[in-house]
Length: 320
Ligand SMILES: Nc1ncnc2c1ncn2[C@@H]1O[C@H](COP(=O)(O)OP(=O)(O)OP(=O)(O)O)[C@@H](O)[C@H]1O
Image (tube, rainbow, N blue to C red; front, side, top):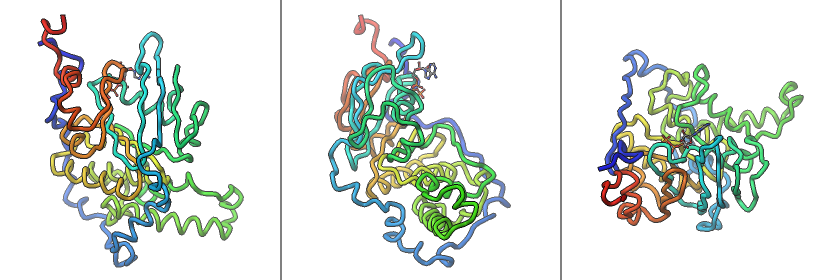
Protein backbone atom coordinates (compact mmCIF):
# COMPACT_ATOMS: atom_id res chain seq x y z
CA UNK A 1 0.00 0.00 0.00
CA UNK A 2 1.12 3.49 -0.75
CA UNK A 3 0.44 5.71 2.19
CA UNK A 4 -2.03 8.23 0.79
CA UNK A 5 -2.28 11.78 2.06
CA UNK A 6 -4.98 10.81 4.48
CA UNK A 7 -3.85 7.32 5.35
CA UNK A 8 -4.08 8.27 8.99
CA UNK A 9 -7.81 8.86 8.65
CA UNK A 10 -9.54 5.53 9.19
CA UNK A 11 -12.54 5.76 6.90
CA UNK A 12 -15.36 4.66 9.13
CA UNK A 13 -14.03 4.76 12.63
CA UNK A 14 -11.58 7.39 13.71
CA UNK A 15 -11.98 8.43 17.28
CA UNK A 16 -10.14 11.63 18.04
CA UNK A 17 -7.21 11.33 20.35
CA UNK A 18 -7.84 14.53 22.25
CA UNK A 19 -9.41 13.84 25.62
CA UNK A 20 -11.54 16.07 27.75
CA UNK A 21 -10.06 16.71 31.14
CA UNK A 22 -12.75 16.37 33.82
CA UNK A 23 -13.42 19.66 35.57
CA UNK A 24 -12.74 19.93 39.28
CA UNK A 25 -15.66 18.68 41.39
CA UNK A 26 -16.09 22.15 42.86
CA UNK A 27 -16.37 23.63 39.35
CA UNK A 28 -18.90 21.09 38.20
CA UNK A 29 -21.92 22.57 39.88
CA UNK A 30 -20.70 26.15 39.98
CA UNK A 31 -22.96 28.53 38.11
CA UNK A 32 -25.79 26.02 37.58
CA UNK A 33 -29.11 27.86 37.43
CA UNK A 34 -32.64 26.47 37.27
CA UNK A 35 -33.57 28.57 34.27
CA UNK A 36 -37.08 27.21 33.81
CA UNK A 37 -37.95 28.60 37.25
CA UNK A 38 -36.79 32.03 36.02
CA UNK A 39 -38.48 31.79 32.63
CA UNK A 40 -41.12 29.03 32.28
CA UNK A 41 -41.13 29.49 28.48
CA UNK A 42 -37.74 27.75 28.41
CA UNK A 43 -39.45 24.53 29.48
CA UNK A 44 -41.46 24.51 26.24
CA UNK A 45 -39.28 23.10 23.41
CA UNK A 46 -41.54 24.54 20.69
CA UNK A 47 -41.33 28.05 22.16
CA UNK A 48 -37.55 27.67 22.40
CA UNK A 49 -37.29 26.47 18.79
CA UNK A 50 -39.44 29.42 17.66
CA UNK A 51 -37.23 31.90 19.50
CA UNK A 52 -34.07 30.36 18.02
CA UNK A 53 -35.25 30.52 14.40
CA UNK A 54 -37.48 33.56 13.97
CA UNK A 55 -37.00 33.44 10.17
CA UNK A 56 -39.19 30.40 9.62
CA UNK A 57 -39.82 31.36 6.00
CA UNK A 58 -36.32 30.25 5.05
CA UNK A 59 -37.70 26.74 4.58
CA UNK A 60 -40.19 27.85 1.94
CA UNK A 61 -37.88 27.02 -0.93
CA UNK A 62 -36.39 23.93 0.64
CA UNK A 63 -34.27 21.97 -1.85
CA UNK A 64 -33.23 24.98 -3.96
CA UNK A 65 -29.58 26.02 -3.96
CA UNK A 66 -28.86 28.38 -1.08
CA UNK A 67 -25.12 28.57 -1.76
CA UNK A 68 -23.26 27.74 -4.95
CA UNK A 69 -19.56 27.72 -5.72
CA UNK A 70 -18.48 27.79 -9.34
CA UNK A 71 -14.89 27.08 -10.34
CA UNK A 72 -13.79 28.14 -6.86
CA UNK A 73 -9.99 28.34 -6.77
CA UNK A 74 -7.74 29.52 -3.95
CA UNK A 75 -3.95 29.72 -4.39
CA UNK A 76 -1.31 30.35 -1.77
CA UNK A 77 1.76 31.32 -3.79
CA UNK A 78 2.47 28.27 -5.91
CA UNK A 79 0.15 26.00 -3.94
CA UNK A 80 -3.35 25.44 -5.28
CA UNK A 81 -5.32 24.74 -2.09
CA UNK A 82 -8.68 24.72 -3.88
CA UNK A 83 -8.81 23.90 -7.57
CA UNK A 84 -11.87 24.68 -9.70
CA UNK A 85 -14.41 23.41 -7.17
CA UNK A 86 -18.13 23.65 -7.97
CA UNK A 87 -20.92 22.45 -5.71
CA UNK A 88 -24.13 23.65 -4.16
CA UNK A 89 -25.71 23.59 -0.75
CA UNK A 90 -29.48 23.22 -0.91
CA UNK A 91 -31.87 24.89 1.48
CA UNK A 92 -32.80 22.70 4.39
CA UNK A 93 -30.07 20.09 3.93
CA UNK A 94 -27.05 18.99 5.94
CA UNK A 95 -24.11 18.88 3.52
CA UNK A 96 -20.90 17.16 4.59
CA UNK A 97 -17.54 18.41 3.26
CA UNK A 98 -14.91 15.74 3.74
CA UNK A 99 -11.46 14.78 2.50
CA UNK A 100 -8.06 13.71 3.83
CA UNK A 101 -5.86 16.14 5.75
CA UNK A 102 -4.84 19.09 3.61
CA UNK A 103 -7.57 18.42 1.00
CA UNK A 104 -8.80 22.03 1.13
CA UNK A 105 -11.88 21.81 3.38
CA UNK A 106 -10.99 24.68 5.69
CA UNK A 107 -9.81 26.76 2.73
CA UNK A 108 -13.22 26.19 1.17
CA UNK A 109 -14.93 27.29 4.42
CA UNK A 110 -12.72 30.36 4.53
CA UNK A 111 -13.53 31.26 0.93
CA UNK A 112 -17.27 30.89 1.62
CA UNK A 113 -17.17 32.96 4.80
CA UNK A 114 -15.06 35.75 3.30
CA UNK A 115 -11.81 35.03 5.14
CA UNK A 116 -10.07 34.37 1.80
CA UNK A 117 -10.88 36.01 -1.50
CA UNK A 118 -10.95 33.40 -4.29
CA UNK A 119 -8.11 33.51 -6.83
CA UNK A 120 -10.74 32.47 -9.39
CA UNK A 121 -14.37 31.37 -9.47
CA UNK A 122 -17.36 32.59 -7.52
CA UNK A 123 -19.41 31.95 -4.42
CA UNK A 124 -23.10 32.90 -4.66
CA UNK A 125 -25.32 32.95 -1.62
CA UNK A 126 -29.07 33.42 -1.65
CA UNK A 127 -28.91 34.63 -5.25
CA UNK A 128 -26.06 37.10 -4.70
CA UNK A 129 -22.39 36.83 -5.72
CA UNK A 130 -20.15 37.38 -2.69
CA UNK A 131 -17.16 38.67 -4.67
CA UNK A 132 -16.26 41.79 -2.68
CA UNK A 133 -18.47 41.23 0.32
CA UNK A 134 -16.82 41.91 3.68
CA UNK A 135 -16.91 39.29 6.43
CA UNK A 136 -19.36 41.15 8.67
CA UNK A 137 -21.62 41.74 5.68
CA UNK A 138 -21.50 38.00 4.90
CA UNK A 139 -22.61 37.37 8.49
CA UNK A 140 -25.47 39.81 8.00
CA UNK A 141 -26.48 38.08 4.76
CA UNK A 142 -26.87 34.89 6.76
CA UNK A 143 -23.69 32.76 6.91
CA UNK A 144 -22.31 31.84 10.34
CA UNK A 145 -19.52 29.49 11.30
CA UNK A 146 -17.73 27.81 14.15
CA UNK A 147 -13.99 27.19 14.20
CA UNK A 148 -11.77 24.10 14.54
CA UNK A 149 -10.20 25.75 17.57
CA UNK A 150 -12.80 27.09 19.95
CA UNK A 151 -12.90 30.90 19.92
CA UNK A 152 -14.98 32.17 22.83
CA UNK A 153 -14.64 35.18 25.10
CA UNK A 154 -13.34 33.13 28.00
CA UNK A 155 -13.94 35.74 30.73
CA UNK A 156 -17.53 36.39 29.63
CA UNK A 157 -20.43 34.24 30.76
CA UNK A 158 -22.09 31.79 28.40
CA UNK A 159 -25.05 34.15 28.04
CA UNK A 160 -22.83 37.15 27.31
CA UNK A 161 -21.02 35.18 24.60
CA UNK A 162 -24.34 34.49 22.90
CA UNK A 163 -25.67 38.03 23.34
CA UNK A 164 -22.51 39.31 21.59
CA UNK A 165 -23.53 37.10 18.64
CA UNK A 166 -26.95 38.74 18.45
CA UNK A 167 -25.23 42.14 18.06
CA UNK A 168 -24.74 41.38 14.38
CA UNK A 169 -28.47 42.06 13.94
CA UNK A 170 -28.82 45.10 16.17
CA UNK A 171 -30.05 48.32 14.62
CA UNK A 172 -29.28 50.76 17.44
CA UNK A 173 -26.73 53.48 16.66
CA UNK A 174 -23.75 54.21 18.93
CA UNK A 175 -25.48 57.33 20.40
CA UNK A 176 -28.55 55.11 20.96
CA UNK A 177 -26.42 52.72 23.00
CA UNK A 178 -24.72 55.54 24.96
CA UNK A 179 -27.98 57.26 25.86
CA UNK A 180 -29.79 53.93 26.32
CA UNK A 181 -32.73 54.82 24.15
CA UNK A 182 -35.96 52.80 24.41
CA UNK A 183 -35.01 50.98 21.23
CA UNK A 184 -31.63 50.06 22.66
CA UNK A 185 -33.16 48.79 25.91
CA UNK A 186 -35.71 46.74 23.98
CA UNK A 187 -32.97 45.22 21.80
CA UNK A 188 -30.95 44.39 24.91
CA UNK A 189 -33.94 42.71 26.53
CA UNK A 190 -34.75 40.75 23.36
CA UNK A 191 -31.11 39.70 23.01
CA UNK A 192 -31.03 38.27 26.54
CA UNK A 193 -34.32 36.45 26.02
CA UNK A 194 -33.18 35.00 22.73
CA UNK A 195 -29.75 34.23 24.20
CA UNK A 196 -31.37 32.13 26.91
CA UNK A 197 -33.49 30.32 24.31
CA UNK A 198 -30.34 29.58 22.30
CA UNK A 199 -28.54 28.19 25.34
CA UNK A 200 -31.56 26.03 26.13
CA UNK A 201 -31.70 24.89 22.50
CA UNK A 202 -28.10 23.63 22.55
CA UNK A 203 -28.56 22.16 26.03
CA UNK A 204 -26.49 24.43 28.28
CA UNK A 205 -29.01 26.97 29.66
CA UNK A 206 -28.32 25.96 33.31
CA UNK A 207 -24.74 27.21 32.72
CA UNK A 208 -25.87 30.62 31.42
CA UNK A 209 -24.07 32.68 34.06
CA UNK A 210 -20.91 30.55 34.14
CA UNK A 211 -17.77 32.01 32.57
CA UNK A 212 -17.01 30.35 29.24
CA UNK A 213 -13.60 29.20 30.46
CA UNK A 214 -15.20 27.19 33.27
CA UNK A 215 -17.48 25.23 30.95
CA UNK A 216 -16.55 21.68 30.01
CA UNK A 217 -14.98 21.24 26.58
CA UNK A 218 -18.22 19.79 25.21
CA UNK A 219 -20.29 22.67 26.58
CA UNK A 220 -17.84 25.17 25.06
CA UNK A 221 -18.41 23.58 21.66
CA UNK A 222 -22.18 23.83 22.20
CA UNK A 223 -21.76 27.45 23.20
CA UNK A 224 -19.88 28.15 19.98
CA UNK A 225 -22.80 26.73 18.04
CA UNK A 226 -25.29 28.81 20.05
CA UNK A 227 -23.24 31.94 19.38
CA UNK A 228 -23.17 31.22 15.64
CA UNK A 229 -26.95 30.65 15.65
CA UNK A 230 -27.38 33.96 17.49
CA UNK A 231 -26.56 35.81 14.26
CA UNK A 232 -29.76 34.32 12.75
CA UNK A 233 -27.93 32.59 9.90
CA UNK A 234 -29.57 30.84 6.98
CA UNK A 235 -26.43 28.71 6.61
CA UNK A 236 -24.49 27.38 9.60
CA UNK A 237 -20.96 26.14 8.84
CA UNK A 238 -19.53 23.79 11.45
CA UNK A 239 -15.77 23.14 11.28
CA UNK A 240 -15.01 19.82 13.00
CA UNK A 241 -17.55 20.27 15.80
CA UNK A 242 -16.92 16.76 17.17
CA UNK A 243 -13.15 17.08 17.56
CA UNK A 244 -12.21 15.74 20.97
CA UNK A 245 -15.65 14.26 21.68
CA UNK A 246 -16.24 10.78 23.06
CA UNK A 247 -18.80 8.51 21.32
CA UNK A 248 -21.76 9.52 23.49
CA UNK A 249 -20.96 13.22 23.02
CA UNK A 250 -20.77 12.58 19.27
CA UNK A 251 -24.20 10.93 19.33
CA UNK A 252 -25.61 13.91 21.23
CA UNK A 253 -23.98 16.27 18.72
CA UNK A 254 -25.62 14.39 15.82
CA UNK A 255 -28.99 14.91 17.52
CA UNK A 256 -28.23 18.60 17.92
CA UNK A 257 -27.22 19.01 14.26
CA UNK A 258 -30.46 17.34 13.15
CA UNK A 259 -32.42 19.56 15.53
CA UNK A 260 -30.74 22.64 14.04
CA UNK A 261 -31.71 21.56 10.53
CA UNK A 262 -35.24 20.68 11.62
CA UNK A 263 -35.54 24.17 13.08
CA UNK A 264 -35.06 25.67 9.62
CA UNK A 265 -31.31 26.14 9.22
CA UNK A 266 -29.13 24.77 6.43
CA UNK A 267 -25.91 23.15 7.65
CA UNK A 268 -22.46 22.72 6.09
CA UNK A 269 -20.36 20.30 8.11
CA UNK A 270 -16.63 19.58 7.97
CA UNK A 271 -15.94 16.54 10.08
CA UNK A 272 -13.32 13.81 10.16
CA UNK A 273 -15.44 11.31 12.02
CA UNK A 274 -16.97 9.24 9.23
CA UNK A 275 -19.59 7.59 11.37
CA UNK A 276 -20.92 11.01 12.33
CA UNK A 277 -20.75 12.35 8.77
CA UNK A 278 -22.43 9.28 7.28
CA UNK A 279 -25.06 9.28 10.01
CA UNK A 280 -26.13 12.90 9.90
CA UNK A 281 -25.64 14.32 6.39
CA UNK A 282 -28.02 14.29 3.43
CA UNK A 283 -25.25 14.68 0.87
CA UNK A 284 -21.46 14.73 0.91
CA UNK A 285 -18.87 16.57 -1.18
CA UNK A 286 -15.40 15.00 -1.13
CA UNK A 287 -12.19 16.93 -1.77
CA UNK A 288 -8.74 15.55 -2.45
CA UNK A 289 -5.69 17.73 -3.20
CA UNK A 290 -8.03 20.71 -3.57
CA UNK A 291 -10.24 19.06 -6.19
CA UNK A 292 -13.76 17.73 -5.89
CA UNK A 293 -13.68 13.97 -6.43
CA UNK A 294 -17.24 13.05 -5.42
CA UNK A 295 -20.61 14.64 -4.66
CA UNK A 296 -23.36 12.22 -3.66
CA UNK A 297 -25.56 10.77 -0.93
CA UNK A 298 -23.72 9.08 1.98
CA UNK A 299 -24.53 5.51 0.89
CA UNK A 300 -22.95 6.14 -2.54
CA UNK A 301 -19.94 7.98 -1.07
CA UNK A 302 -19.28 5.01 1.21
CA UNK A 303 -18.94 2.75 -1.87
CA UNK A 304 -17.14 5.25 -4.12
CA UNK A 305 -13.75 3.77 -5.20
CA UNK A 306 -12.13 7.20 -5.64
CA UNK A 307 -13.15 8.20 -2.11
CA UNK A 308 -11.93 4.94 -0.60
CA UNK A 309 -8.64 5.32 -2.49
CA UNK A 310 -8.26 8.92 -1.31
CA UNK A 311 -8.61 7.89 2.30
CA UNK A 312 -6.84 4.56 2.35
CA UNK A 313 -4.26 5.02 -0.40
CA UNK A 314 -3.99 3.03 -3.61
CA UNK A 315 -1.81 -0.08 -3.97
CA UNK A 316 1.35 0.74 -5.96
CA UNK A 317 0.55 -1.61 -8.85
CA UNK A 318 -2.97 -0.15 -9.25
CA UNK A 319 -1.84 3.48 -9.17
CA UNK A 320 0.80 2.63 -11.82
N1 LIG B 1 -2.93 30.43 4.84
C1 LIG B 1 -2.30 29.48 4.15
N2 LIG B 1 -1.12 29.71 3.55
C2 LIG B 1 -0.47 28.76 2.84
N3 LIG B 1 -0.94 27.52 2.65
C3 LIG B 1 -2.12 27.22 3.23
C4 LIG B 1 -2.87 28.16 4.01
N4 LIG B 1 -4.01 27.57 4.45
C5 LIG B 1 -3.99 26.31 3.97
N5 LIG B 1 -2.86 26.10 3.25
C6 LIG B 1 -2.52 24.86 2.54
O1 LIG B 1 -3.60 24.56 1.69
C7 LIG B 1 -3.85 23.16 1.67
C8 LIG B 1 -5.28 22.90 2.12
O2 LIG B 1 -5.36 23.18 3.52
P1 LIG B 1 -6.72 23.12 4.33
O3 LIG B 1 -6.41 23.56 5.71
O4 LIG B 1 -7.77 23.83 3.58
O5 LIG B 1 -7.03 21.56 4.31
P2 LIG B 1 -8.08 20.73 5.18
O6 LIG B 1 -8.74 19.80 4.23
O7 LIG B 1 -8.93 21.66 5.93
O8 LIG B 1 -7.10 19.93 6.14
P3 LIG B 1 -7.32 19.42 7.66
O9 LIG B 1 -8.28 18.28 7.55
O10 LIG B 1 -5.96 18.97 8.04
O11 LIG B 1 -7.83 20.57 8.47
C9 LIG B 1 -2.80 22.51 2.55
O12 LIG B 1 -1.73 22.10 1.75
C10 LIG B 1 -2.38 23.65 3.46
O13 LIG B 1 -1.06 23.48 3.90
